[in-house]
Amino acid sequence: MPASRPLAPAPAPASERARSAGQGLHVAIISDGNGRWASSRGLPRSAGHRAGAEAARRIIEASPRVGIHTLTLFALSSANWKRPAAEVNAILRLLHEYLLTETAHCVEQGVRLSVIGRRDRVPAALRQAIADSEAATARGTRLHLRLAIDYSARDAIFHAACRFYKVTELSPESFSRVLAEVYRGGSTEVDLLIRTGGEQRLSDFLLWECAFAEFLFVRKAWPDFTVADLEAALEEFAHRERTRGALPDALAG
Ligand code: IPE
Ligand code: MG
Image (cartoon, helix red, strand yellow):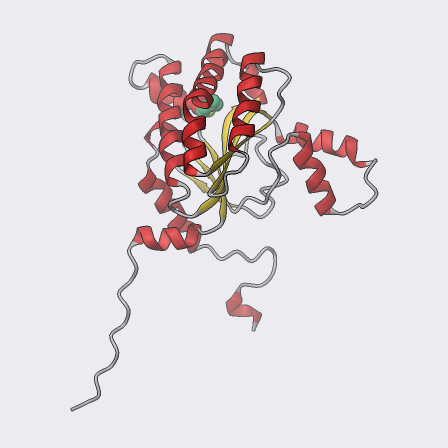
């Protein structure tokens, strides 16, 4: 009788593979499509932003479970000030509400919350809520949640460059440190950038940090983005070969 061959291990379920692929990743999301989601339902754009905030809650909750260590969400771009004041105010109110209702939950869940972006143009009460949430969650180690509010990567790089002349150690690492201070909230390399809503552009988000990021463009509007979509994104990411300019493993010899 032929010796029985050991059984090949059963392939791990997708969510498990996604989890291991997501281990320690920095995922950044351009959560686009809220307005169109609402308009296509005959709702005001603000309803799309509210639904988008719910989607954000779901994704934030799931992130540590799928092994993401840093999640950066583009909540409000500096370019969004060009929108009608009522819409921008609705977004600012949602952000304020999020900080007030979720900070305690973040503390419980080990989520450290930071805000990146300018703080001088947002309402004083929101500025205070940001500072309070950052202080309350400072010890979280399960997930670093970074909300980009009044954020422009070009502006951040410009201001870091203006300060950089004072720095004695001139290196990309020291520049990154200055950049992290300009808009606070740290500055870490993005592994995977996801943009929902069908557009395929970077829109002044994390220009420096995305130098070697993998990009994934999803047609779905942000309010429809689910945890399963996040897992599928991580699975796709796991199949990308990241060479950072070197040769792929197969050719490297
Ligand atoms: C993204 O959705 C959310 C923010 C910019 C705050 P949009 O508001 O850009 O939605 P669309 O692109 O108009 O559908
Ligand atoms: Mg948009």
